[in-house]
Length: 388
Ligand SMILES: *Cc1c(COP(=O)(O)O)cnc(C)c1O
Image (cartoon, rainbow, N blue to C red; front, side, top):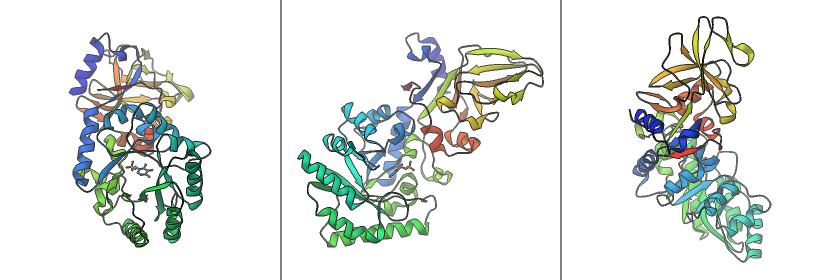
């Protein structure tokens, strides 16, 4: 019902920036705050929150999300130095951890902007230490250990001696030790349990060498829900913050609200006669006269090509099929043979709620044969984001 209201508002307010737009994303700040509160209710009082805002805040809009969360979380997690600098240039002073491996000038940029760096090897730590000495400014680092992800991080077998070496380097402030889970979907999953044991052991052996870490962290969204023993004193939720479930098993334990709605206008309404086709490859042919609405959204905006002849959009609370191939900038929606209500300029929903109906990122992903992470991170940064 709420989105009905929003739609009317969008139509009647002449000053609305949305009027000029043919497609836009609406961000529900209250939903974002709700999701954060839900995550906090699972982790409080032991752990603080590092909000993961990599990949343009999972496609939601990096600055829009960070502005909303800046005073409510302890840390931001990003994947590239560019993302970190977008935050710093916007005056956001919240601590930021760069997950990736900084190459070339990125180390200097990070130290200057007071962005903490993840470290996966002694060599990387040396490079950072050298740069910090050159700049006469300490670098804040979080050492990552590979306890089973098999991606970034110091291999578990050599972690303790490597940590000791890193601790002996100049101008490095060892602020954190962390690891990452490849399959935390299952409660009491023995593999994740093993990772947590190894991580704890590395922490203990480091402590014996008098190396302490102010922050210890391991849990992504699934870890937050399924592995409280992995909360330590900081957790790193990503997808769940945006109200999307990485795995359906999390639903009963964590009530979330989707933050994002994706809307677009029908820009042209036309009739197809029986036997006429719509779109490239002529993969849809009308078997009787039908009303088609052209919506200016395609795979260049992040609407998956795999939803050709499979997707649906919502109009006034009802679902209508996407027919023909998804093209670069357009999809065709089949409103059926007798439909006369739809007009050019009308708003349809590609993702999100419209009245009683909803298209979630999870269902769209399932239809498209992908994961919700990919659906949202593919949303083009050029689509305007509007905060509600
Ligand atoms: C992406 C990422 C996360 C967040 O994962 P979600 O599954 O989205 O909660 C946490 N930690 C690291 C290191 C990541 O790269």
